Amino acid sequence: MPTLKKRLNMSLPDDIEEALSKLSKRDHMPQATKALYLLRIALEIEEDDVWNAIAERRDRKDSTFVSHEKAWR
Image (cartoon, helix red, strand yellow):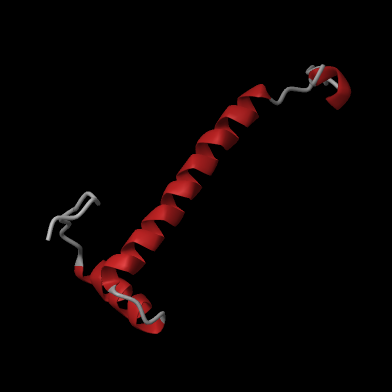
């Protein structure tokens, strides 16, 4: 049966496969579902790192701050 989702075939090292197997059994879900869940979390963390890097470049001691009221006029 065709699926709307993109399939991804991956080769996992033994230690990763073992961890994924244990986590999926612990949480009573298929390995693919657990892998997708963990991948989503990893992508969120990666996105947070990018936004943090942007914020750190903008954060300076000589910065001037704009009040909320003034910014939304």
